[in-house]
Length: 148
Image (cartoon, rainbow, N blue to C red):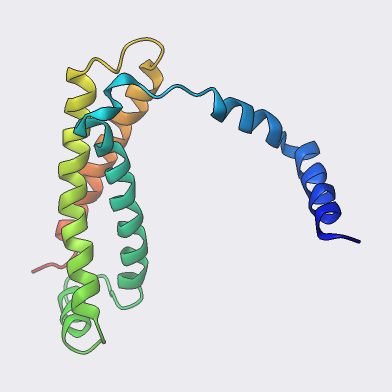
């Protein structure tokens, strides 16, 4: 059996289940807002990228972190001084957290001032406000974890 025939069979099988042709058709006709040429358009994507960095470095830090008033600072001291590149992972996590809070804040203001929260995007605005509050909450609680 040729490679093209196998590909067509696999594509047909997947297309029956999740309508790949419909998704491709939707993406071909998707219009990008006129404000995409400005720098304000990119802060949402930068915030998502920084969140992914937070998730990866947070999982790496979780391996060595021991919670508690007596053990948390000692575990971070061990991470920074004894673990290979532990200081780098902690610094990346710290800097990306600060940058993420900044980018989410700027993104919220840019959406507000560009009036991108209006119909039909009201639910996007509301979910964004919930994510903004979660970002501030996680940022604040993360600053308290070292107990220093």
